[in-house]
Amino acid sequence: MAKSEMGRADSAAVEAASTRLQRALAALEEAVERRRELERGRGALADQVHTIGLDRARLADALDREAARAERLDTVNREVADRLDQAIATVRTVLAGAAETPGGAG
Image 1 (cartoon, rainbow, N blue to C red):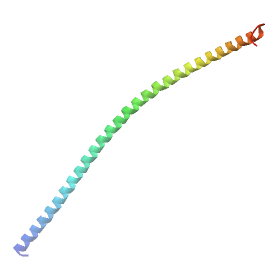
Image 2 (spheres, rainbow, N blue to C red):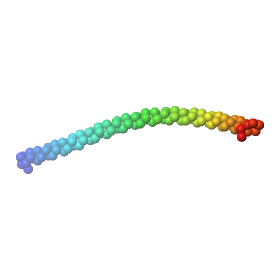
Image 3 (cartoon, helix red, strand yellow):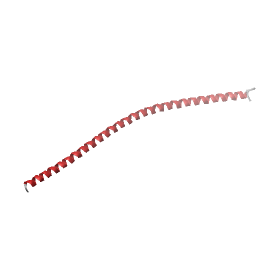
């Protein structure tokens, strides 16, 4: 092989190696950018999970308060119903007594 042919072969090999190196660097840059995007996405997801956790805690607290309120209302409702039953019984007793007495309504 002549010296000029060896020079061209070496030049072609260097050119090919340079092309491979440029492609490898471009692939590395793309991989790094994809990794950055994933990390940004992961950070955004972590923020969303944190926000959801806060909302869940807030909603659980509100639910506990409303459940306690509903229990108090149920207790008051039962007390009112008992009092109404007593009042109705009293009115019936009074009306029954009035109907039995002379000169009562009727």
